[in-house]
Length: 359
Image (cartoon, rainbow, N blue to C red; front, side, top):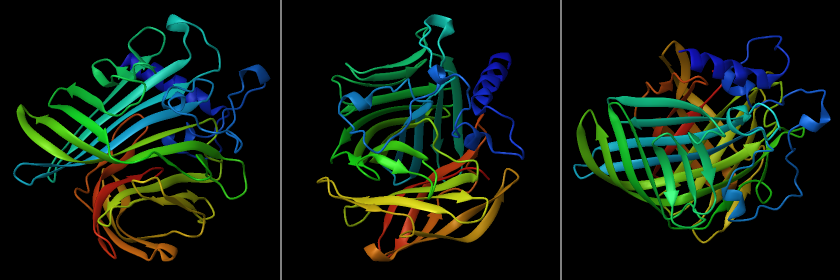
């Protein structure tokens, strides 16, 4: 437990000053780090930067936080449904580029496999600079211990993801069936109505997946769809923001929907999202165009969370009812949150994932 405590304290040190009231750890690490040393200030997200590929598939160590995020809705040969999540986070304690054990880069990885009746989850940490975790652009490879996403070229697709931890394992082949989608204003994704809080954010929402899952010693062939998110920032959230509700959905008409809101202390949520198609067409959804309404709540792991939602986007003639595969998905990680597979009915049918933080 010692190394986890040390890493936790290091991560909390990113917040700067002590908050005046309790703040969820997931939210704290995404607020701006305060420093009196201009040379140690993290790079800012600005609207005039153009994302460039394949370079921006790689790391951005001059920014405070970033993540590589995969969620997949899978089915086995018997029609059983599975949700899979793999994430690798990079969190910097300073802007320095010290080598070895002095590296300021800390990596955290999450892996989750969900069925209708069970959940297997694992969390790992490593410090950058010692080879235990990291990322290379060519060939594309991101790893922490034996959890690895790798590809032959400088693009993540086609790629292979494999991880194993005690009672679960996954070996997946991942191919991209569409274009990359830049959220917001060509990848500049604003997160606050007034303050300059933003991230660089793009997705690959049109992924096909096949491979094998292992749970409690039993293996299953699976196939399905997946969604890949890449995001990095140095000050994504403001002090008056409390957490977010995020939905990624593949709709039955072939389009993909990302809809999210960041909740604030004054109960006014900032909404953002996009609707996209495999040919690269994307319609940004701005603040005020998305209505996310909780319909019912459930208590799980001591948290009362909205488990049924209505998603209304009048400009897109979208009106969805959202239900979860499994309610007990509060993930007890160092930075805890709820994440799990969902299905939608209404104006469209579809499957995807929901994430709730800051509760």
